[in-house]
Length: 452
Image (tube, rainbow, N blue to C red; front, side, top):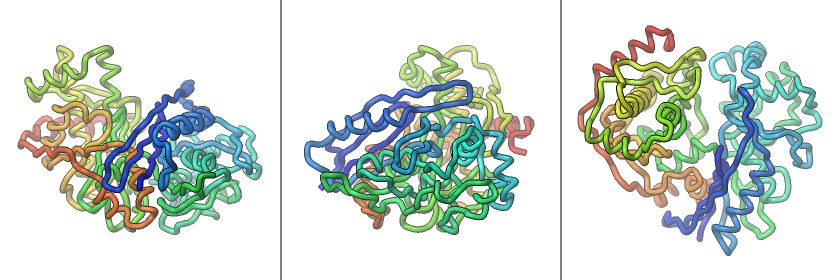
């Protein structure tokens, strides 16, 4: 038996075919392009379908036993009632509707004053309405749902994970009809919502297509971090943390939000605007592998950068005014590189401290995924600063996480991941937590009013 996971990323579509033992049998990828104009970021949904068809044809010659799909959280488009697209896809980081957040909060302050963020899908839906789109004639469709509908031949339900940033009430397990009515949003525009893993339909070949999750949750599954105390830290262009809690964590600052765990309980976490993306801006054309080797030989530096990829922070605190800064001297590329690495590790540490103040279980281990795991020194530095073991999964790929979800068929995802996910290496902390520099870094964040 074998299952396919599909990952609709920002820059590519990836597919992984895996068997019941967790062995990757094949994989394929196709590039995607988008259109950016100021704060706007769009993609052509037809490009997703072309790329998906290509990777599916490449990874298997025989029909798999199931497919599940993940996509970027908050990416959506409008279709007609037959499922044909009528808008481009508005991407997860498209900020055209930031001013609509206040309108949403005013409609239901108790619900959204601390949970709604400006780049989520719901503000952008209101912006499209203001642009003249009549939602009575359209459906809101997340990117994973659009591809699933393409595979099974009819519109499909969405999942609780993708629905979160569209305003779905995970506690009531329902769309907030009264709140939507105040915003002038007809319920007919919003899809049915099901648990991840639910069968949505079958392809013409009879392959079940299962409801997926967002890419951050998919990476968490691929890392096997599905029990309280185990966390997944996804570090690529930006930083995303995901964990598990039995009870819903309530964050009055709005920095932490939670998905539903498919097996019950919650998946709390947050998405920072810091990450490795700063390195390509600060060190254009640099050999990052060589710098990682040099940093390992040199060790920590007496400098730290707050490595924002753009103005504004979302997690572990909400500060729209936040800007990048550096403490200490960075006289050469090595110091610039090391200062960024230390800054990301400090943000991770601060995030876990914030999560524990909200009632999360103490951090027992952290699995590292994302493109930045190619930096061996960076991996060890993060273990040192966090003071806990870090694990490097054998297949740290959101598409692989979706193969695991498809294999679960919506039942006992945690047990399925335990059988399929393998850890390649464990790095133990060496006690070099850089406490003094970390204290200076947090004090500077406070002095600037970012954590107020």
